[in-house]
Image 1 (tube, rainbow, N blue to C red):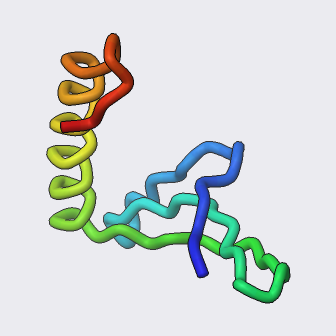
Image 2 (image 1 turned 180 degrees about the vertical axis):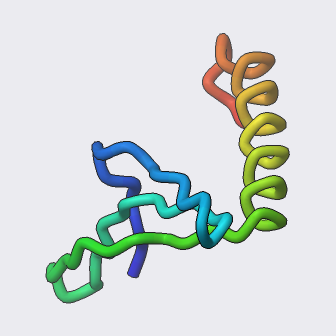
Length: 68
């Protein structure tokens, strides 16, 4: 099972102070369901840092196609 981001924009809920990211969850049996991943502020900051590092790594290694 895995999830992929949907092509819709994430939304910030200022009342609950959280972000919702539309995703599609794909089952091993071929079924899929659309839902939302909810990120609290700490989780959002962690993902921001992780994605930034991954983008930098991709840019450094992108010419070779390797993700060291």
